[in-house]
Image (cartoon, rainbow, N blue to C red; front, side, top):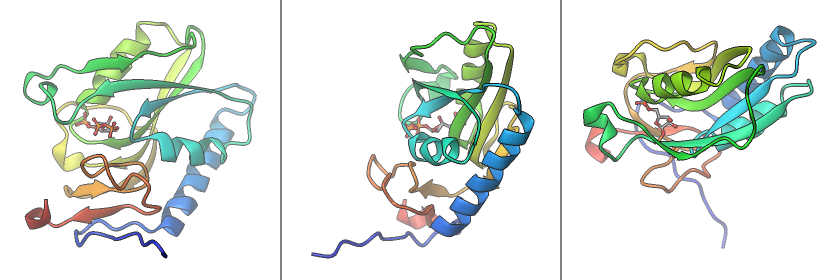
Length: 181
Ligand code: PRP
């Protein structure tokens, strides 16, 4: 049986081609900025796994990669402002040029927590690459040095982002209309 990837009917729709083009641009920009250095990318699980996989292959530099997992949606942090570390880094970041790789920055609470956590480990530098940003939802100001797309406030999923844990495998980004959520 031939499968099919279904898109939602929401306002945010970003094709696989548009994503690929933007990821190549971000990779080229990072490669220029980190020429002569060895960046250390930190992928924030789970949502950023697809973006990270494509981004690292668009950065023609020696680099290292690690993964961290912290909880956000669907638990107490949304009301309390608390974020929980689910899986720690495996590699040291002291003295490294760290690039945090996120799929989406929404309220900014996850990233704010993460930046504090990473800065305490004294990296040489720390920057952020995020595929998507929803500025309308921001609660804390956070830096994004490499941004894929600024989007409006819709429930987005695909390309690593989930819809109730499903649809991370969609090759594009799509969204729901409010009444579909
Ligand atoms: C998403 C995303 C960010 C966070 C952004 O993760 O990957 O980490 O939410 O939201 P914020 O700016 O409001 O903090 P999510 O908790 O959905 O988990 P997942 O990556 O495992 O899908």
